Image (cartoon, rainbow, N blue to C red):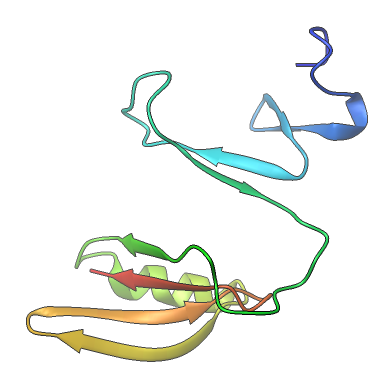
Length: 105
């Protein structure tokens, strides 16, 4: 990234031995091929002012559901409410900046 002129040393850091962006992360399923769809997360200078423009629903599986929710709470997320619709259930949470997302088994 740096050698090709796409980034400066100040823009990057090393994480698990890889050179990565300091203020962003791209997430792709571990088994996905290069070029497959990904989710890009990046910092922005403005705070949240209105309802999310994008809402994430994260499915983690029944066996991991409670542990994932607890881990998110420990990391600073807030539990907003628990929901059900038919056989489906989920929790709506917010990150420390108030961005909402759902976790379901």
